Length: 288
Length: 257
Image (tube, rainbow over all chains, first blue to last red):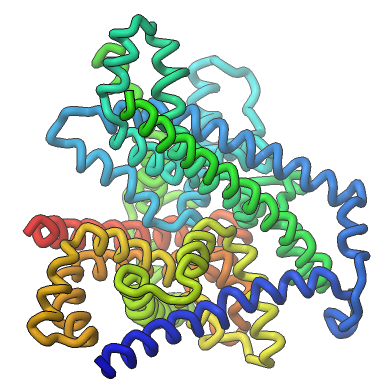
């Protein structure tokens, strides 16, 4: 018994020490840093100030936030619209190739999104594949300049993050029990009503999970706007990177990252709510 | 929905996911540097890669960090999952929540927070800061993978082991590790590929004297298109693919036992 207590004590304290030192403490440091003053020679000064948060209200930064939320939101919506039917068909598929098909979705998840972003350049550039095909088909008369624009950034983000939307949806839809759908049909609901009133609420946790996994990285993957976007397509991630490594204004960079953390907190709250709606439906239906 | 529409939709999404990568691989064999047209088959770009001594150094750095980070993260992550599954302790819910938050939190936030930590600890940025960071961001993924498998185990096994006089350490070594090795291996593999591909966190916590592969690729990509880069990315993609496929072939049989 004594050795068990020792084992328990050692393992728990080992895990806690590591996570405290390298996860909790650094997060607290960012919070503290966001309230310090900037010092051009020494990165920061140990003096409390609210100037960083005041600076965030500056239209220049506000524009970047607005633009980022817009791009990340649009990217989440596109991913959701593309992924939902895909995940639904895949999860309901009755085929021996189902696991192989799922595996094909997971492969991009395991490979570098940097490489996949790079691969997009050759398609989108002025003399790239897309323009060549469209020109030769006569659909367009002049080459499209998609590369180095916000459109290219959105395409790159959707392409990189699509598997992150598909997987939570797939897991959720696969657990969905068909009795509910049958019951809705028996009670006279048409396809649209069944979808809106039964399927959609039951898959809400999957939808929220996917949105979290797409929206947050979409704002912070600074290399995608860097590679595919132009000067105007700066996102929150680029702003943080810039403040930390180029402008050397760590307090301001920390304040920007607190906004990102706040966005994460809000999304997690929504996710919890979505998860609560799910079981609530299960219970109420079970009671009937 | 009719069958044809369903399958064409699936096919379209798979095309979207794979087309750019396949194109990249095809172009890595193209003789022309800039043109889209096919100018004949060549292995020149791969030969140039082999001659690039910088590339070999950074690849070795990446593998070194990847193997060490994956192994240590697997150890700590497995222990964390075991603690969460078997024990009640102060801060258990907090630990659960923390692991979940670490998975969804944006990489860039973790990157700058670790940069601040290393700066305040007066640590030189390089191998050690990189290794510690990689271990940290891999731990939650291992913990979640292993934990989900643990919850599928029959709790009676542990009762039986205890009745037969096994201590917790012994049941960890003789029950948890052997029964969960597919999940542990999957956690290791996931950590390894995460470490090998990480750009964002590494960008903040590495120093000039310890360059790693993703950052090397990133610096090349920023300069512009280079045919060697097509070759390099193709090699990276095929290697990751091979590792994942091999592991997939080994794993399922064991899981179903």
